[in-house]
Amino acid sequence: MPITLFHGRQDDVVPLEKVRAIAEQLFMNLEFNAVEDDHFLHNNFIKLKGVAEMNFKKILVIGSGTMGTGIAQVCAQKGISVVLSDVSREILDRAVNNIRWSVGKFIEKGKLQEDRETIMSRIRTSTGLEAAAEVDLVIEAVFEKIEIKQEVFKKIEALVSDKTLLASNTSAIPISDIAAAVRRPENLIGLHFFNPVPMMDAVEVIKGIASGEKSFQAGAEFIRLIGKEPIMVQRDIAGFILNRINMLANMEAMRLVGQGVASPEDIDKGMCLAFGRKMGPLETSDLVGLDVQLMAYTNVYEDEKDSRFYPPPILKRKVLAGHLGRKTGKGWYEYNPDGSRKKE
Ligand SMILES: NC(=O)c1ccc[n+]([C@@H]2O[C@H](COP(=O)([O-])OP(=O)(O)OC[C@H]3O[C@@H](n4cnc5c(N)ncnc54)[C@H](O)[C@@H]3O)[C@@H](O)[C@H]2O)c1
Image 1 (tube, protein in one colour):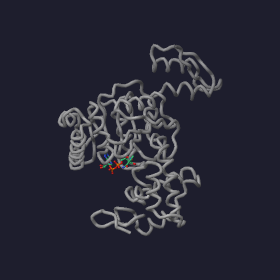
Image 2 (spheres, protein in one colour):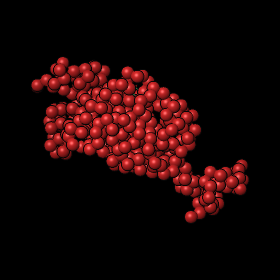
Image 3 (cartoon, helix red, strand yellow):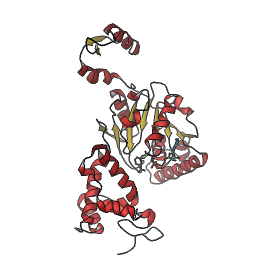
Image 4 (tube, rainbow, N blue to C red):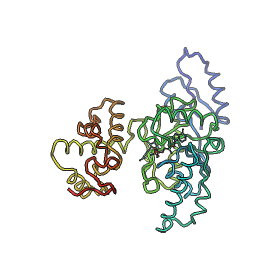
């Protein structure tokens, strides 16, 4: 099938024949039609960019915290070799122990057929990033700070082939913002896993403004390969889809408490009984941390200045007062030192 080749306007500095020659070098054995239209650049040429179909035999996960360990675990359980990287040996040893424990639990419950050491033998650890040179996919799961993520991707780009798919597990930073630091943004997408990774089947696959369509589709293919369901986010937007919807419900629950309409207990109980949730929005807020939520809502609000995402005043006041949830013993509820909830 002939491929449409974008040329641009007549006064473009690069002549059509030169564009054609470069494209033929890049995509050997393909036939090109020439089209002089800006629209085609986006709809056809960009579509060709990014990594092609992949095998996903070996991956590198950077950051071995809550999310990185979960991602490494599910991949190893599906027969994929994983290199798990972090800044220190102690962190990596702890991560491997956590994975071993979690895999053991799944085996005990009869959810995994292979023995534990076979699964664990697929995970190798490293305090460096050199493994990037030999993997099909790199998933970054380091701290939620754009500078750190960009730094990691800059280092990775110098090591990987141009056929390696790159993904960030950011929960809220637009992929396009992270990709601004790399030379091949077409290879970078978002793969947003949910916590706890071994239990949660939805993964948002996010297309940044410069992500190639092929990379986007390859990301979805990988998610299916590890037994999860891709939720395709076609356009980069702060908070992506699922958190964005959830945020609005959470903030409304907080506002209702702030306005004295209902107690946290009644809201949580009602949301569980009426909508089949395992946990109400306010108990979840105490678990996640009110400060973490305030930061997430503020980030989305600042990105768009959409008043729907303006954080509720009661949330700001609680954070200022140090009522951050379980970690400080007080949030929407109060907690005993052993972590149990105080009775009203
Ligand atoms: N925790 C969640 O519920 C959740 C859910 C979805 C997405 N996320 C996102 O996933 C990412 C990781 O979150 P987490 O909860 O696993 O964090 P975490 O704090 O548990 O782990 C982050 C790990 O990254 C390591 N790290 C930091 N800088 C590094 C570097 N330069 N190179 C290698 N390792 C480095 C840290 O040592 C730490 O072990 C964040 O972007 C977060 O927003 C978190």
